[in-house]
Length: 217
Image (tube, rainbow, N blue to C red):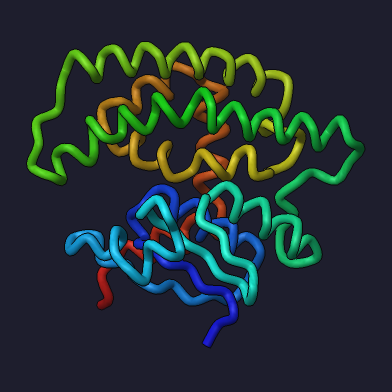
């Protein structure tokens, strides 16, 4: 049995975020499904792993975590000598800049993009009706965020610095879902953002995460 355990589902954006970091680090782990359809995430034993009743939950020996971005940072730092580096090597300013753009993802990109993903992706999956007015408003807000990204990516190959880091990785799940909808036009209106997405979507670790969503042959 793998020492590292992830409790979640491969369709969950937060679970996907943790999984891609594990694959980037080349670490062995066990993905333990949590049945969201029966509410298992709101019951014991999962509620003891994640007190908010969400996925994922993470265990690495005595280390127990439940927020995906905390999990990715733990993996980047604890397994710094494994796999791909998820913080650019450099001085404190480089690291601080990377952390700054990690905050941008969590504070500016994710809130709007996740609401848009709910309208575009999850509402149809749940048999609910997408609200066109909400979509239009959210696309406008996301476009303004991506205006900032477009400027940044004209200055740096990746968001945090000149190489792929957690600042980029954290965007993968939600951006992936939105690029499968008509809202992809918001990204496509930003050429440098589109080129950046193409690079991060092409990473081997991300392909492995998407492969987990395919039913067994």
